[in-house]
Length: 186
Image 1: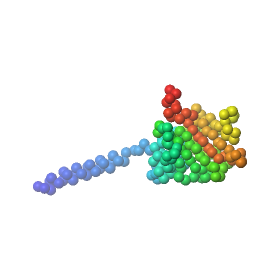
Image 2 (image 1 turned 30 degrees about the vertical axis):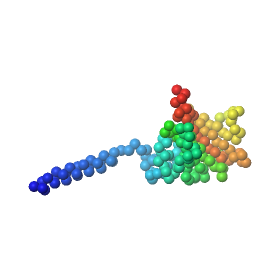
Image 3 (image 1 turned 180 degrees about the vertical axis):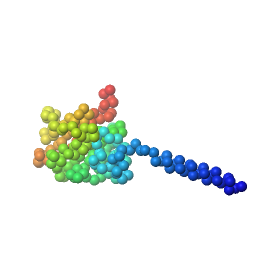
Image 4 (image 1 turned 90 degrees about the vertical axis):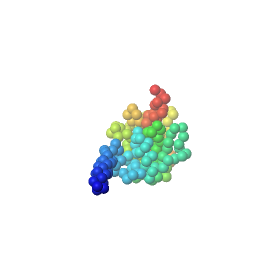
């Protein structure tokens, strides 16, 4: 009699286990590029203006929160390693979105060509094919700084080394308006 009672329980356990495992295998909303990265890492080629802050926040082995850069609704993260050109990344986020990325080459400035390659990589994917041409400097702009307007949503700056104006020390890509600034203008 006890055996008859155990059979339905065993069937119930088997069915519930199968349902549990198949529901855990649902398609994820994570991008394919993020799936190629080990958990806790975010390769520099996936760090772009406009991505969700969560991508950077979860990359605990690639980026560290910067408590000195977190204020006024802005969160800042520093790269733990340097990119292939020796650049240190500073990623600034507001309202759950990356709105500015700065890459510093202070110890070893890079060529203009390398800086432009890095700049293109920092842009949202839909803007990477737009041509980059520096705008004419205005009175407010620092000498040695090239400014770029990239589509309607982004702009960028390349800052030349003071000792060697043909080399770049800072690459800065940012949304034309940060997320909370855009909300205040509406």
